[in-house]
Amino acid sequence: MGRNFQDANDFLPPAFERMVTANAWSTSSPLDASRLKLKLTTSPKDVPPPDSKDLLAHKVCTDHMIVGRWTSEKGWADPEMVPFAPISFLPTASVLHYSTSCFEGMKVYRGFDGKLRLFRPEYNCARMLASARRICLPEFDPKELLKLIKKLCEVDGPKWLPKSRHGESLYIRPTLIGSDSSLGFQVPHEALLVILVSYWPAPTGPSKGLRLLCSGEEAVRSWPGGTGSAKVSGNYAPSLLVHGEAKRHGCDQVLWLFGPEGYITEAGSANFFVVWRCPQGKLQLVTAPLSDHLILAGVTRQSVLDLARERLGESIVAISGCEPLEVIERRFTVSDLVEATQRGSLVGAFVVGTACFMQPVVHVQNDNTEIAIAQDKVPHVEILRKWMKDIMFGGEDNIWADEVAEE
Image 1 (tube, rainbow, N blue to C red):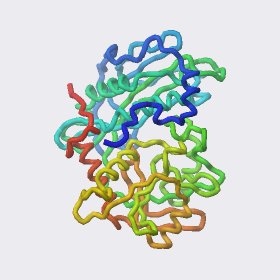
Image 2 (image 1 turned 120 degrees about the vertical axis):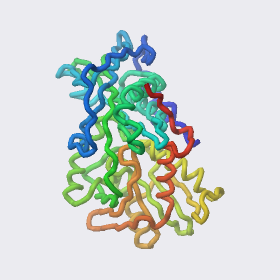
Image 3 (image 1 turned 60 degrees about the vertical axis):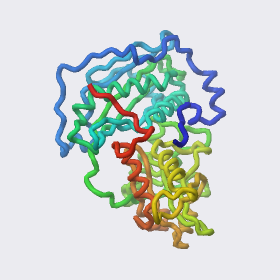
Image 4 (image 1 turned 90 degrees about the vertical axis):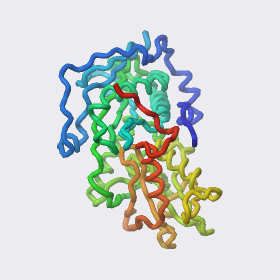
C-alpha cells in the first residue's frame, strides 16, 4: 500500500548516488543482528508514574540500549544490548566538531488488543541509511538495524509499556555517530550506533491547535543541495534561534519558508499540509514535494498521502457523505495561503510527524499578516487521524503494522 521507500536511494537526490558510491567504505564485517550479545542490567529502574516531571520532560529511558561499534579497518563489531548508561568518546571526536551524526524517530505502540507494534519501520531504517550516506557514515543493512530495534522492544517493551497502558507508546531513537578521534576534517574512520528507547507520555488533552510564525529571509532551514531531506543532527541546532523567536511571539513553531517567493517547506520539524478548495471547486490536500529535497520525507507524511489517495479519492466512495479529496504534492507559498484565506477557500491546515502525530494549525503569522484557520471545517483530517491510529494500535489489520514479539 503506497510507496515503500525501502531503498535508501529513494531518499537521496540522484546526483548524490555517484558520490556515495565513490566515498563509501568497504565493510568487511557487516552489521549482523544475529551476533547480538546480551548484557542485561542487574539494577532495573522503576517505571515512573505518569505525572513524573522527568517523564514529562522526555528524560526517562528504559533499562537497556543497543550499541554497535564500527571501524573502517574491521567493519562492524558484534552489537551489544547493555544497561542504559553514558557513552564516552574523546574530545576530538568527529561528531563534536563536524556534526557527523544522524538519527531516526520511531515509536512502538501498545495496541488496544494488547500487542506491541511498530509502524512502517522499514521506512525509518532505509531513511537512516540514506542519512548516514549523506554524511559519509558507514553502510549497514536496514533489515539488520530493524532486527536490533525489535529485539530492544522485545526486552524492554513488556515492562515499560505493559498491557494495562494500551493506547500509549514508547519513542525509539536509533543514532549513528562519527566517533573518530582525529581532529582533521575527514570521513570518519570510526562510528558508534546507539539505539535507545524513551518513555513518551500520552497527550494530556485535546489539542487547541498550533500557532506558527513564518521565518524571515534572514533564516533558512534547508536549501538545494543541502541536507534538508536527510535526518542529520546538524539540521536542528541552527533552527533553535528562530524557534525561540517564534516562542517570543506567542507561537508554538516556525513555519519555514524558502526563497524570495516564500515557498512553504516544514513547520518546526514536522511536515505541513493544507486543505483548500481550488478555483474549480475541488477540495484539495496539498503539501510540499519531495523532489526539491528541501523537506524530510516523513513517515507520517507519506502515510497520510497514501491513505488519502487510496481511500478519499474521486474514484473511491470511502465514507458516505464525505467529499472526494484531490491529493497534490507541489510547491506553494505563504502568499497562496493568504489568498486562499481571503477567498474563503482555506478550510484546514495541520502538521504531521512521529513525535507530534497529527496536530491542527489554527494561526499563521507572516510579518504583519495574520491568518486564522478554522478547525473541523471538513471531516477529512479527523478521518485520516482515526485510520492512522487504528493501524498503529491494532484496530485495523494492515501491512504497515509490524508486530513485536514479547519475552
